[in-house]
Image (tube, rainbow, N blue to C red; front, top):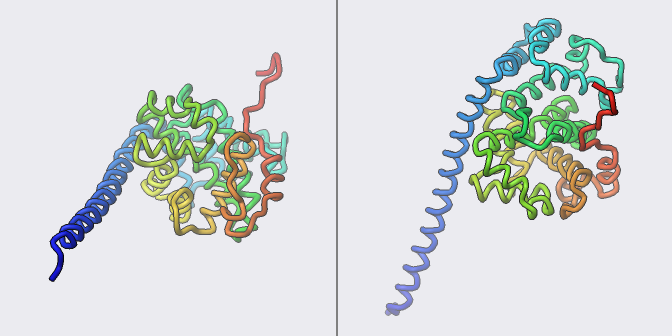
Length: 299
């Protein structure tokens, strides 16, 4: 005969397990609802940046040429400056030699222009919303991704764009809740803890982190599946892809350069045995993670 206490205990255990399952389901449903709402925020933000939004659409059209794209891009002064600066960066080996916008578009490629336009459309360059060095760090992640691409056997131009897009979700969260997100960025524990502390704080406040928001936005804008998947997986436990491992390793390199006080993560684990500590340190030492200061009298 089964003891009543045993039956009661088994029932309690079953109820507890059911509660855990329900809680887990509720959390997933809540996260999905949050992401859907944040994609609506992206659409609203994009409507305020018609040039950037048009560029996102144009760069998906194979019939559009560099001169035509440059003509539209020229209407957005801030985005034009960023594309031109990127074309003159060390990554492309043409420092100081790219002087026209059509040439800049040709140098960086349509995919990179599209990535930069998408980030601008999401409001990343709205003054006061994110730290001043946000764009520079995005470019550093892109450069790190590009340098690591051969190690992971993936094309450098495409994963370079992935790096540019990784922080898009931060802009969306910042516009969604300016006061709340600023409080997260200014929190001493987040500053000391670096990127992992930021992700944890985002999940506590919003139920999702910024890379998940980036992934949802890219899916909504019909970017290549491997980019959205990499952003979805880079901060998720479990399964990864070569793209997400490359991005995760690149993000760690930028973290080492930008926030040396943050607890380091093992690149050997992040890269599944492809990038050793000494290689990551060397990469981090070459990255520019702060905006260059203008000299007196420079415009």
